[in-house]
Every structure is written in C-alpha cells, then in structure tokens.
Image (cartoon, rainbow, N blue to C red; front, side, top):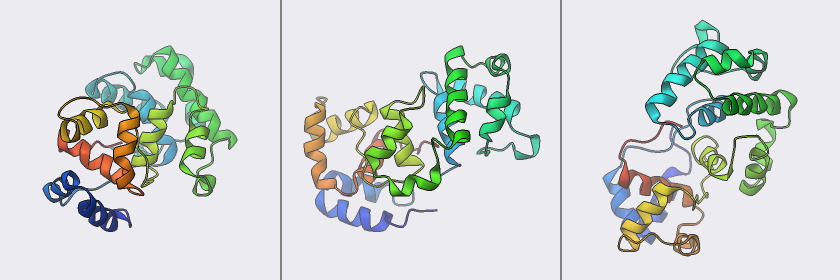
Length: 214
C-alpha cells in the first residue's frame, strides 16, 4: 500500500527539484512499501550484512526454516523473538550464519522479548530517538537503522548520508560525477524537507530501477 503522504511528497519534490521531477515521471507506479513486521525486518537486515544478495537469501531461508513453523514460511514471514532465543547457537550457525551474526540475532530477539524495543512506543519517538534505540542492539549501526526507518517505518524525512548508493546518485545528478562530502549532501537536501526519504528513494531508482525489498 502506498504511504498516505506519497502523492503530496512527489508533488512538492517535483516542483522544487528538476532532477527529482524527471525521476518521479520516469517511475510513476512504484513507491515505498512495508513488507513485514519490525522484528523480522531487522533480523533480515542483520542476516544480509556484508554478503551478496544471493547468499543472504539462501541463509535467510535456512534461518526461517529453523525458527519458524512450516505453515508460516513465506516470502515475508513473521518470526517470533522467542523462537530465535530458544534456538541453539549451533543450530543458527548451521544455517550459514557467522558466530557474530548469530549472537546479533539473539541480542535483537532479546531486545524485543524484554520490551527494550517495543514498536508500540515508536510513534512517540522522533527519528533520532528511534535510531538511538535501534543502535543499542548489537549488529545494528546507524545505516541499518536509517534503512529501517525508511523502508519499514516509512518515516518521510530520513537522509542517509553514509549510504553509498545515495552518494553515487547525488554525485551523478548534482556534482558532475564527483562524490560530495556529507555537509554538501545535507545542504542540497534542505530543499527536499520534509520529504528527504522520498527524494532518496527516487535517487536510488536512478541507479537501480527495481526497488529493494527490505
């Protein structure tokens, strides 16, 4: 389902920025879309860190088979933190996870099971407060938290200046191919507020037309 703010955001961005206007017209029928629940989304992000998409998909399917009942296995399953906590570390390692990632997933599950991460309270948090809560989990850094805010929480005004794809797209469209420093990216993005997530998403599309399923 398209976010409620999407049409307003694209209308405003299209008026303010000629590059974004072209991209919005180029990709008229695609938009951000939430795929799964918070815990499962973050678990998948940890599984996929620093490995290829193909390898991540293979390990993820093994992980799901280990911790999810068969009737709930699908492209976007809903995993239970308690099931991850109950799984022996060796069983998680057997899925193809490194020791470190297995520990990260258990730490994530512990945060959800204990209520230290409670999605019911997130609407009260601004972006920086939610990022701060997420990075307390082992294996979740600022970039992963920002991706989560954009793709799952559908927060409209996140600017992930450390993202290589965004750096490349901004260099290509605004700086004659020269990758800009973070300060220059933030200055450029002032005109995109309060819709910097949407601007980022369209700039990603200029490099890869197929949206990532996060």
